[in-house]
Amino acid sequence: GEGAKPTMVDMKALEKVASPPTPKGQRASKGVKVVPLHDGPSESVADVQAKLNMLTAHNEELSGRQATVPELDKLLAKIGELGCPPMRQFSLTNRTSVIKERIKDLEALGTESEQRLREEYAHQQKMDEMRLLFAKKAGAL
Image (cartoon, rainbow, N blue to C red; front, side, top):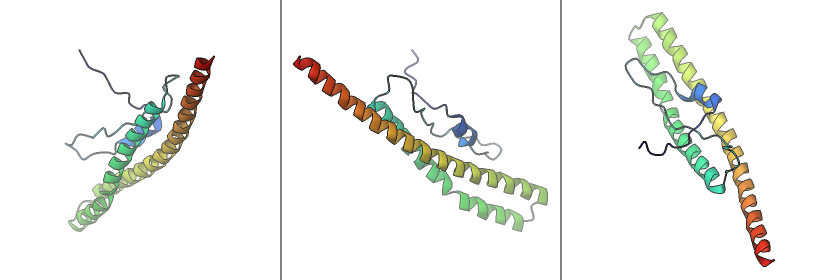
């Protein structure tokens, strides 16, 4: 058998910015995927909590990537000092700019997703309380 496949994201905006270009010869890391907010009527507090946990993991990975950006800037400066051809320098500078922009986009998306997940979590908790109250009342009849 294949085993259970984890539920993963399909947020188009995230996919566009999720993996920055990598140097030739290296494989791109797929990174952590963010789960969609609504999978349908079976959403529960546990489902939303799992999504919040995945978002936290994603944010931790993003922080790790952000920490490497100053190193990219240092490498670009060093490449210029070593006499790299101007067109190659321009290409590398553009690539670094794209990475920085993607990181900013991911930060904004993560903040928005976290807010929506927290709202959904509160909603699901309220729904659970209502179900429990209903069950107690139905049992009392």
